[in-house]
Length: 152
Picture 1 (cartoon, rainbow, N blue to C red):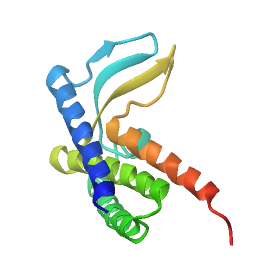
Picture 2 (tube, rainbow, N blue to C red; picture 1 turned 45 degrees about the vertical axis):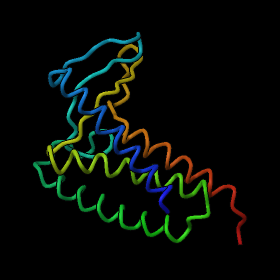
Picture 3 (cartoon, one colour; picture 1 turned 90 degrees about the vertical axis):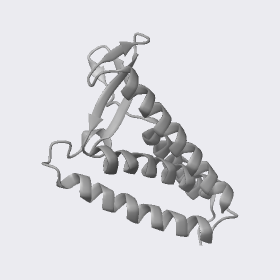
Picture 4 (tube, rainbow, N blue to C red; picture 1 turned 180 degrees about the vertical axis):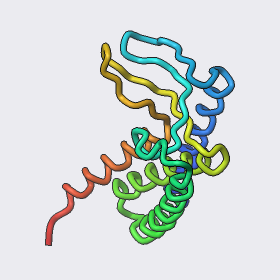
């Protein structure tokens, strides 16, 4: 169990350090063009993924905080129960680390710091962060794991 929680802790540390660096280097809304399709930015997301409920008046902070705490408890239980299933637990550990990284922002700042911005001409993918990336990779691993298991 410790190795899976260590993966989560590494994700949390990377997430918090990168967000801290962005907040210290960029003013809110500032952008730095890195390539023709990628910018570093400093945005705030008060909602969930892709800004869902971003302008909902504040109640969403507590709603997503409760969801994150509940998810963390369920994920921790699932890791403990299935600790020998490597791909499954790695996926869960990545989701857990990402969820807790964003939860820290939500509780301490009232919003989540996003800073990775990919775009192509006028089409842009919503800005995201290390925690969001970890959650996405973790979910992909969980899906992959679900396809490799035999059905009963």
